[in-house]
Image (cartoon, rainbow, N blue to C red; front, side, top):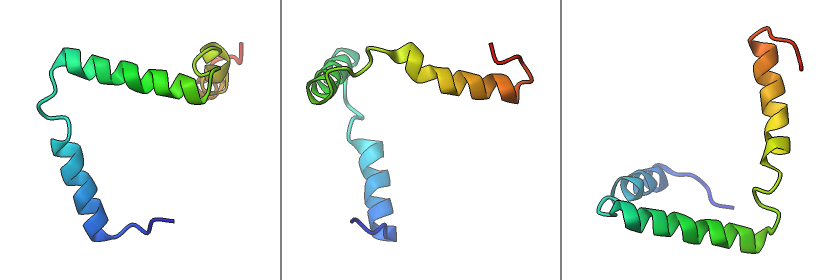
Length: 70
């Protein structure tokens, strides 16, 4: 297990600010496509039933906003 330290937080913050700074939009989309391909390779059903995945979140949102469950 990785223990979070101030040095690790600082490193991660710096990395997030600089890692993809110079990436063009086409390069960013290509990177996203490769990551999506990798996710699907690891879990073939990834994203297939997205509406069922959202159902619990939508039910909570309805309850919070005072709407009926359906």
